[in-house]
Structures are given as C-alpha cells and as structure tokens.
Image 1 (cartoon, rainbow over the protein chains, first blue to last red):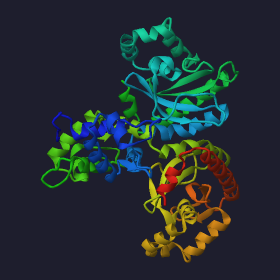
Image 2 (image 1 turned 45 degrees about the vertical axis):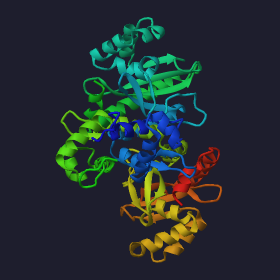
Image 3 (image 1 turned 120 degrees about the vertical axis):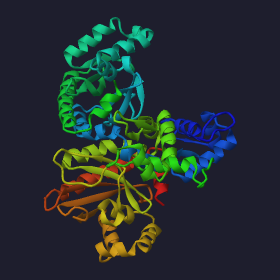
Image 4 (image 1 turned 60 degrees about the horizontal axis):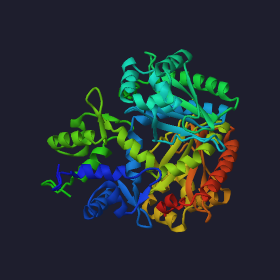
Length: 257
Length: 257
C-alpha cells in the first residue's frame, strides 16, 4: 500500500475521511473534513475528488461532501447486518403497531449495543436509539439482555473491563443479570432519559444465547409495560424461529462471542 | 494516488472489491474476490488484509470475506438516503398494516429505480424489490410514477435513451405517463412477475415533483387494489408534509434531476 512520508496509507486516510461523517455531520466542507480526518488539506482535496469520482462520496450543490449513494448501495445490498434486520422487521412492525412506541433491534459489538434498526411512531416516547448508533451495554435494557444471554465469559470480561462505570448504575450487577435470565427480559427506568422506561428481550439461538436484542421505550409510569413485554416476547420467539430456518444465521451470533 | 503499473489506483481496486459483493454473494473467498474484482491475486490478498484491519471488510470463520460491519455503521449513520427512509417509515408501516402486502420506497437514480426500503409481511405477494436493489424504470409502477412526476426533460431524455426497451412494454409511453399524472398513481399487471399487480404513488415536493415513490405489490386479480391505492395516496401525502418540514429535504430530489 502506498504510504505518505508520515506512514499514513491511502486506506488509513480513506477510512478516517469516511469516519468523519455521522448523523449530526452528514455533509462537510473539504477543509472541515480534512481537519476532522486529520489529513493534510491538499491531500484531502485530491482524495475527496477521487472518492467522489468513485461514488464513495458525493458533492452536494453547496459544495459540501457527503457519504455517496454508491457506497450506501454496496453496503446495503450485501451486508449481513441487513439479513437479521430483514427477518426481524415484520415482527418488529407487529410490536410497533400493538404498543405504539418505537421498537429497536440491536446486537452486541465491541462492548457496546449497536442499533441495527429502529421503527418509530409519530408521538412516541423520547428514544436515543437511532440506526447504526452505539449505546453503552450496562445503561440500556437491550445491552443488559445481550449480556445476560451471552456466553458466560462475555459478561465476566465486560465486568472486568468496565467495573467503575458499572458500579455507578448497578448495585449488584451479577444479580441484575441473573434476574434478567430468570425473567427472560430486562426493564430499566430512565437510564438514558429520565422520562422513559426501556424494556428488552433477547432473540435466542438454539443454545439459548442472544443473537440480538429487541427493545422498546415507553413513557415512564405508563401502564404499558406489561403489554409491551408480552408483545416483545412473542415477537422475539417468532424471529428466533424464522432465523433458525436460515442456514447462515450463525454469522451475527459468532461476532458477539 | 498511488498507481500500479497498470494505472490502477488503490481506490479503483478498493471500489471494485466492494462492488464484487451483492445480495447473492455476501461472502467470497479472496481468490474469487480477486477474480470478480479483476485484481491480481497477490494484490488482492494484501488489499483485503488492510481492508479487514480497517473494518471495511470482515473475515468470517470459514475464511470468506464479507462487507464489514464497520462500513455498514459509517454508511448507515450518515447517508442522506436514510433520512428520507426514516421520515417515510411510520407511514409505510401504516400502509403495510392496512394492506398486508409488502410496501417499498424508492428513488430515481441513473435511469433506474433504486429501492431504499422495503417492509414485508409474512405470506405477502411475490416481490422482487429488495433493499438497495435496482429495477427498470419503465417496467415498474414505482419507476413510471417517478418518471411521470419528474421534470419534463427527465422523461423525454429517458425515452431517447431507452426507446427500444420501452416499446416492448408500452404502446404509447407518453400517454401512459399522462394517464399517471392525471390519476396521481400508476398500476401495472405482471410486468416483472405475472402473478402480481404493482401500484405506486409519488411523494411530492412543493413543486409537485416526485422526491420518491412508494409502491405496493398485491396478488393479481385480487380486489385489494383500490384499498391499496387509497392507503398509498394517504400515506404519501403524510410523508410529503413531513418532508416539507425538514430543511434539507431537497437533497434527494436534486439528485433525480
């Protein structure tokens, strides 16, 4: 790979440029892109030009640069994250219609919750889970479910790495996880937003380990929680059954181990 | 940009490697990837290694390579295609629940229909529109709606470029488009699948031009079409109103002009 004098390869710079965008910064000028990606301006201009020509980026009318539709196509046509999502979607819609609050699907990646999909309702409760967002495992009911239903060493290792942060939110983390395992679901009040309650259930494989978690956020002190949990558990069983009939379902599971 | 002796840059090869994956080929061995991407094997091994290290690709347990979750995250966190999708989704779900067949959202890109989102129902009619798939404009009701409600020169230029293909399916293409404009929707029997009928409506901006199309596929000869069209038209008006309140909605529209 061609390296610059700083030892930075084209690929290093390309990845930093793509990584400079997020849901708040969907379009950036080339100079702010150069700054955020820590790439010399002249190099950034050249590289961005090539990336635009290749469809990885696109130039908007005002000259700002955004992630290209070409890249969106490649990724969404072929990423395995979309398989789980496609299978889960009809069941998520059912929950969404019954409970009338937004529903989300997530997996465990690098000690975090990665949101794969989210269905919203107009007028739903405040909900910080947007598509491709990451959230802390120990502060979300989806994360707690993913941990509770992961291989035993996953939770233990997570606890070692994040002891201090965990302590702030859980008096007895192991007991919380046991409790979730017994109940088959997790629910927490206002961990991320004070006005809401989150509930989540695991989507289990044949070993009773979580392939993914499905969660919902309802207004705190509403009486919708029992209904929401019943709907989630029913839908999660449907998704688990549908996944079991797909030969390649192990892929996303293995990622989380 | 560093070029090989063939004048092929790292970016050229990277884009061809990413483009080698699709919904049928989600995982490939490095040698088949090298073949499909037309990259020398030794170069492919090196480049794939770097791309895996950077999260653009990932290596599965069996050694096959797939598009990386890291790239999925970057793209889905920041792509403007997801904005339209996020706004449209609750309305699409409403249609989906009322009509009980799969609903899809698409835009016009490079003389084709690009599917941004699809909601399915278990037991729905056969439907070839999957997420990030492309379909011919003149052979889908979504495409016909996008053309009918585009700027006048868009349809004329499309007709010039695709005269022969159009003739096979439409006796009088201009009249079909006029008809769709008058009705406010398009419906065609069995263009892509003989057993189904597609219907689509435009999602309009303030100039009455299509920003996107929303479509549904129902079994042919079912009596669900009038209901489906009523549901689609209602939902499309809701999406149009929701888009009008978002400052940046013009982005996807401009792309189609």
